[in-house]
Image (cartoon, rainbow, N blue to C red; front, top):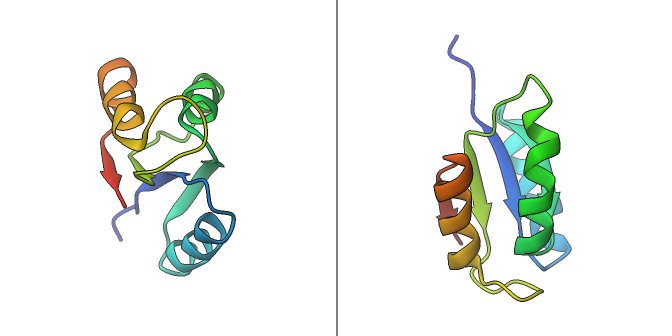
Length: 88
């Protein structure tokens, strides 16, 4: 069986990460973390890099708390950490 993706969820709503985590986990995906802002996600990545789990994908809300948008967060994750993203 092929390993499923390890996913980071970034959203400013409290229900979205919880519901999405439960749903994706039920299909065998691993949620490596959740963040409620772009800044928080970017600060969280160095800690994730210290673990054996590679972050394969970031699911990012378009509108986020903080100074940077979901699109900016996606661009920074790709540029600095080579993590692909999907905006939702």
